Image (cartoon, rainbow, N blue to C red; front, side, top):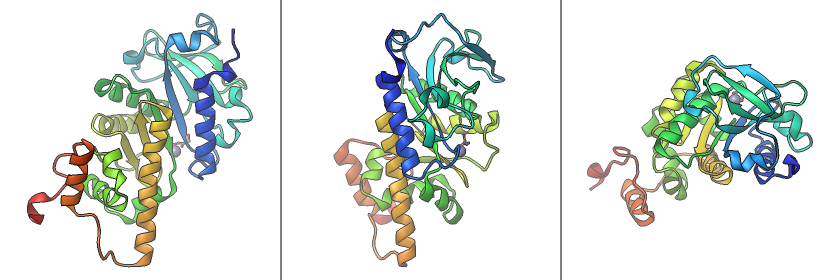
Length: 276
Ligand code: 2HA
Ligand code: ZN
């Protein structure tokens, strides 16, 4: 068996956790990532028939039965992932009955998967139903997006439009906009259901006064998605600090941008009639 700590998927996870920490978006035990892997990918590094521990789950994960995920650990600090991957990460498989997880590697000090496992697994189910290539769900406490949830209207259309207007590339990167859930207790099935419900329509979901969820096909692309929205939120913060907005990207320009890049802005989010 090859050393799993050299596996490309593990290196990606370590690098991403380190970057999220370095950017200040995952203080203390903030943030969590789950990465869907194929059996063929993991079989070079571990015996898939050797289950180390089993942990029950109180929601129905049967849509993901038998699937493998690399997942950050509950209570673990992203700051420490690079120096101790086996303690801070774990490789799990969803039990055949969908009522628990089987730990195959990691969580070496007796740990368990992230407390946000319901939101992650439910979001994977939602994203896989619209894009079978979806593999990554990522949660972090992106600073400016989090701050915006105190000062900006939480209406999804309004929130999305502001982000689209702040950087030209936003509409191209997230034409489906961002979803916003109500404030809910983290770690619960309830916030998992609310998040995954939004994930059927958009790959970015804001948790007011807490952080953001992103989903995508690859680690890089998912990180880039959050990074782009966070950059727009940072620009918004600076713009607001500078004073009243004198000009912005018009809805007509946003529509032309979408056409030029072959993406469809979420229906109803642009006010074209009023501008014409
Ligand atoms: O895992 O970020 O939302 C720590 C968190 C909870
Ligand atoms: Zn969080």
